[in-house]
Image (cartoon, rainbow over the protein chains, first blue to last red):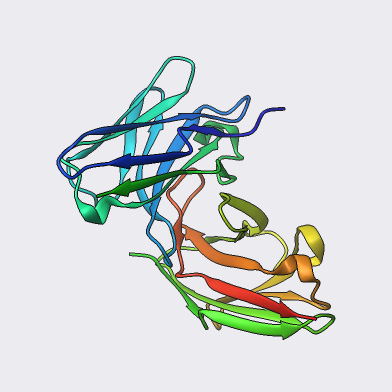
Length: 116
Length: 113
């Protein structure tokens, strides 16, 4: 049973550029959440997608956007990159709210983004 | 708004000694509480969760945590540390099933031989 997968593993971008990160959820999961983990800190919630719509959003600017596809995979897009966007970006998947088990979020290995 | 405070950003224990990691939360509603572990250059792995059932929760790798509503705490313990327990541990809270997780700042555990 494949767990949550993310690509790429590492990425180096320049300030002002745009980046797209990808996530495939655990088999059977339909909800995807994205988190940003700066060095030495706990993860911070960016947003969550369910049924191809953004359901919840954390305190992140509009430069951060996302998408969920019909196969439940998801993308995180960040425009106009800043040095402060350098972080580990974690994707987590879970079952939908109606399943009764949606509190269990399973995390992928993350994408390490470095902005220079 | 919910928040999580983990006391001690670093904890050093001897192999075989008790591991105690402290977590206090604030929440306006009965919370769901979680402990995750993160090994170097990896994602987060769920250790255990509290979802309003038994207050003493047992997890993987010999860890357990006790929910104390009066103290708004959810401390993580393991009776005997192993070298493989060296990692960073995060406490998290959620106010509802399917809701976002709010994490504490993490506690890095060092295990001395």
